[in-house]
Length: 160
Image (cartoon, rainbow, N blue to C red; front, side, top):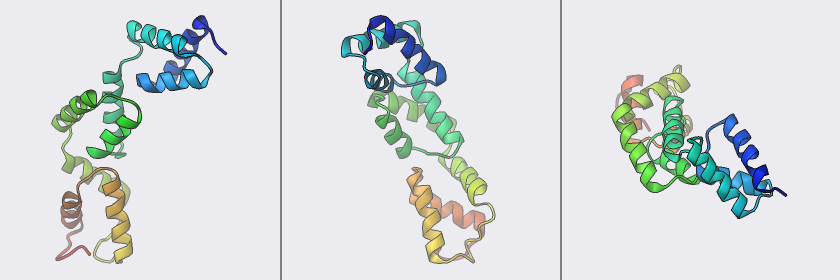
């Protein structure tokens, strides 16, 4: 489909909507019919102009995920890997995030926002498992989930 001149404006339009990883931009350009040469030229040009930066993308994406309760730790690692970010960059971002955000505080915020009116003492086992599973899928550790739910709900004894 596209020639070299056509890949640049398409890449700019893609990046104007939101930040992408290099791998995402490559995939989107190839899906639009651009060959490897045109795609690589456009990616290199976007990187050279500072419009494409995997470190910046990973940091912004991860911070957004943590702030919005979409993930923490292992979940962020998995999502960034899916987006084609290098493991080294992901590790740096996760180290940086653990300095900025404490897992307990993020988890408490998610629990208060998503399950504020939920009463663990009155819930059945199925509902408890549903909530714990939801939080685990977001990357929070089981022991911390149980601790936070126990503390916030004022439960005595086992949660299950």
